[in-house]
Length: 342
Image (cartoon, rainbow, N blue to C red; front, side, top):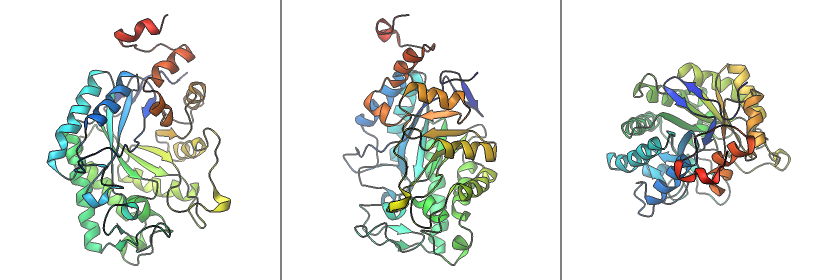
């Protein structure tokens, strides 16, 4: 039976276990130039040393005004490739594969003088009103995603993740809550995301998997639920998505009656439904820090991989500790073996 420390393979991506470090923004690009720093290097490589099989680099943006803040990573320039390549190479040396999350913050770009979005609707009363993208600008945006993916491939990553969740640009297009357009990108809410997927696939190696992070449900009045996310995920799968990373929310101020659960594993049912409905591999995420719980998500076939976010922020060696607690075999760095007696 599969468990947290069984290998996993999808296309050309071979992982030694099922533990994923999910993308979590570090807001640490001190020069505001989108280039990864020593902080990013230490942050990601330490999790590779700590046993995670798959490290997904944080939200990395396709243009300067696509960042949540000016302290975020970017891939709009070839100058940003070498620092990422250095991180990828080091993670590989310690047995981890590396993905990167390619994104645009849309109306949630806090430091942009004029954020852009499908429609001119602010996130909340404290946010700037975004400018509605023209149809031509949307087509240019697809090309910006494509160019960023191409640069990520040059940096040596093993997989690409497109950020279609948490109220950022792709999510904004696929949600009737934020997309009030009347052109082709409003008549078909999946059109922008589908075109980004196809553009990404066109510059990726054939055996490299494309992951898409989605919000499986929204928490606003009139927001979509799992039935709608299953339908738009089918479109993205047909366009070329190989795996879904299933989160939730982020599209707007949470309705009082729609507040997400605060219990552990509250998003796992969403991942399970996507997996079963589409017959596609999924990553589960959200309060899965307890090793026995994470192990059960794999053993019960709710998901194929488990993303451990805050737990891995607290402890870069979460994966090694989990193996010890679960009494599972895993490779311990030689330098640390004395702390993990047989």
